Image 1 (cartoon, rainbow, N blue to C red):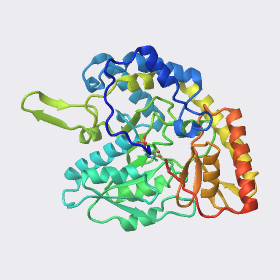
Image 2 (image 1 turned 30 degrees about the horizontal axis):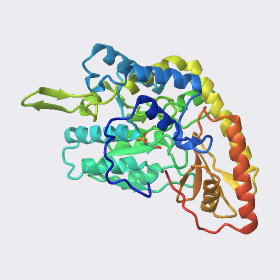
Image 3 (image 1 turned 60 degrees about the vertical axis):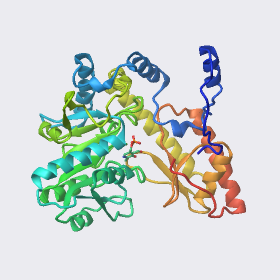
Image 4 (image 1 turned 90 degrees about the horizontal axis):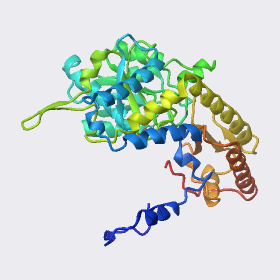
Amino acid sequence: MLEDQLIVKPLPAAGMSAAAISEELARIEMPEPYAHFTRAFRPPEDVQQVAKAAFQRFMSDNGFFSLYLPYMQRIEQEVIAMGVSLLHPTPTSTGNFTGGGTESNFSGVHAAREWAKVHRPNVRRPNIVAPRTIHPSFQKAARYLEVDVITTPIDANGRGIASEIAAAINSDTIMVAASAPTWHYANIDPIPEIAAVAREAGLWMHVDACVGGYVSPFLEKLGVQLTPWDFRVPGVMSISADLHKYGYCLKPASTIFWREAELQQYHYVAVEDEFIGTYKLAGFAGSRSAGPIFAAWAVMSYLGEEGYLRLTRRLLDLKARLTAGINAIEGLQMWDAEVLPLQFHSTKVSTAAIYQGLADKGWLMLGLVKPAAITLPIDPALTDEAVDQLLRDVREVTEHLNKVGGGPDGNIRYA
Ligand SMILES: Cc1ncc(COP(=O)(O)O)c(C=O)c1O
């Protein structure tokens, strides 16, 4: 938060010159590598250039018309079709382009609620059952949609427990949600077991793969064994997957996928307006830039399978280097992560104090409050030099605190 909030700033009387504007904006520093993790998830420079060129060409076009303008509809549909191809789709699986993970999860909850009106007509006050680690965007969607969220215990590795979910389901439950993976523990919930519980109870099952949706398929292709979580798991009805995370696309860009095309009808809201007729759009937003849609198409087309595999190999390499580097520092422990992001904590001194020490050195880090951890949302734009500097700074801060003692003070911020 800004300390000195501007209450009123008059517009410049005469308007600034383009040169003065670019000069002023050029003075805004984005300190690298210190701000790297707040700028995740970026691909290498060449991919960014392709994305930005496509974004720039179409950013003034209105994505409002994506269901109606053939040139835009084709590109949006191709993004969806390429995305769904990664998820072991059924012959009719499809999806929608959204403005981020929050909107994708909102869309899942909304569709489930509309579906339940038809398939669970006796529900009075709908609820969702999900492990405690479910992303806060579900609570947010639930509030907008007047749905309750019932959260269930997790195991020692931060995974949801199918029997706890089964026990929490009641006659007002409409949906079970779980993550692949969670942000907090980077582990995939036991989706096959949880989906079986949802199926048995006749409920909508949503998988939040916002973090993993565009990286897990490539990890698997590289031979990494992962808990199955996509449409190959019976009962999974919708999946959210963020293009602007490990899809490496420009924000805001995400996808919500439906197991069968017929489920998509619960997503759309068609308003019959007295003056303008049928008002039906692709998603929650009205007018929106078409830039992210075209940029996503450009990135997916430019990288192709080979490109995503190459960037996934780089992630595995970074994960191995950072894990070895952090674990080599006395008292630090990198958490086991089935997917990503990485998290580490201190077993000797306060993790919050280490977080603060890094902040004092200029690092803008993400973290978890409880259990305390420092989060590394690594991406392929992270250079070897940045990794070396981070490890040097973490070592210096930690060794100093190990000597003088780091109390519980400090302020870890999620963001
Ligand atoms: C598991 C998970 N779901 C959903 C979201 C929300 O995504 P967004 O910030 O794009 O709305 C996040 C964000 O980090 C996430 O980690």
